[in-house]
Image (cartoon, rainbow, N blue to C red):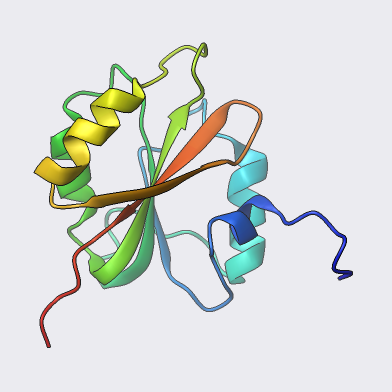
Amino acid sequence: MSSTAATGPADRLGLKSGMVIQELGWDNDTDDELRVAIEDAVDADLVDGEYGNVVDAVLLWWRDDDGDLVDGLVDALTDLVGGGVIWLLTPKVGRPGAVDPADIAEAAPIAGLSQTTTASVSKDWAATRLLAPKTPA
């Protein structure tokens, strides 16, 4: 790959081969191209909420009408390794189900997460990087 090639969405999300990625909140409106790009980047299938083991990162698809965001974020922490990342995927502003960025900024610290960056990952979806606290050794 040349240095001038555009980085793919999985690169922008920092997802690498060998990582275990849990996907929560999948529905028929999720971006399949993004999902395939992530699976290609990590060289594995995404795991679901029934996985029952530690994961390196969580993809949480979330829409405005999905319920309480704090609860959704806390649930997403269940299998996440300490210091792991939740990528909160929300419809972009102006799209059906868009989540107000202020709601994310308010919910993240309540759930014990630090909001770091956002990335545009597809035509209809934006990703917000939420960092889980490191677990004490």
